[in-house]
Image 1: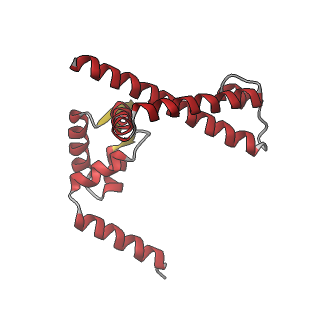
Image 2: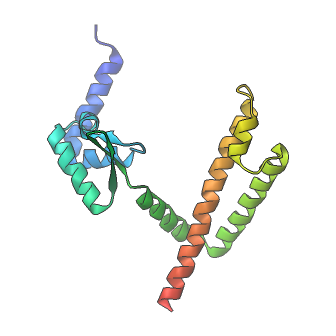
Image 3: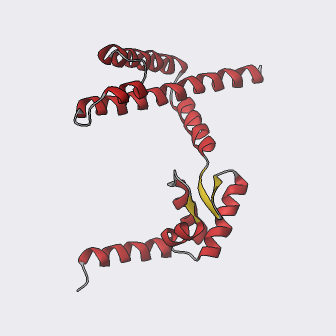
Length: 170
């Protein structure tokens, strides 16, 4: 007996395949790939042949959208982390004013200081060493602390990029 979800999934796949090109599907899979995946895995997910997936992955590497790593004899493809960072910087620069960005930086620094004071540690990594497995609030805070620290780094990078852009334009 066919499960109703199998039919729905197959219909969604068929619709995706009908509405997109093979390149678009490979691009979409790479865009979602944080850890490297083989061309065979990408082909399976993108509903294309392995040679087609490999050809499009190589094109995405050549444009800088994707990057590769080796796992033995297998080439793994994933989205380019530098490109993602630059996209976040551009987005933040375009969506916030310098004043809003500075205010946000102050708020994030204060939030990090509160985590340091609450747990009497200087980093999320140090906090992880002190937490028991069942301390869900602590683990939630650890995750939020790491996210805040990443967002703070991006905000600082955005300020630096903005300043450099203004200096070069002058």
